[in-house]
Length: 115
Image 1 (tube, helix red, strand yellow):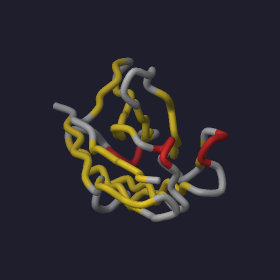
Image 2 (image 1 turned 30 degrees about the vertical axis):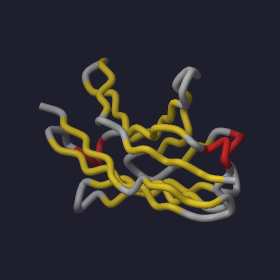
Image 3 (image 1 turned 180 degrees about the vertical axis):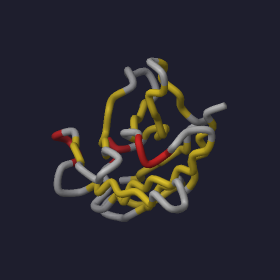
C-alpha cells in the first residue's frame, strides 16, 4: 500500500524559507518520479516541481529560482526547499506519486506566508 506523509509546513513571513519533506512507503521509491503539488483555497491544484528517480528535476515557472526539489533514495524521502517565499505561495502542499497508473498523495502540509 502506497503511503506518503508530508511535513515541514508552517507560518513564515514573506521572504522567508521552509523545507518540506515527504516520506514514502509501499513502493520501490527510487524507481518513481516524485511530485510536489499545491492547492490554495478556492484554486485548482497545481504542479510545483518534479524529480525523477535519477534526480532530473522540473519546476513550474512561478517557483523557478526559489524552490529546489531533491530526494534521498536511501531513506525514501523527497524534499522541497522553498526560499524567498511570497504570500501567493500560501497553500496546502502535497507530495504525489503515480503508481500503476493511479495518483497517490499524502494528507498535505499547510504553508502560510504573511506579507
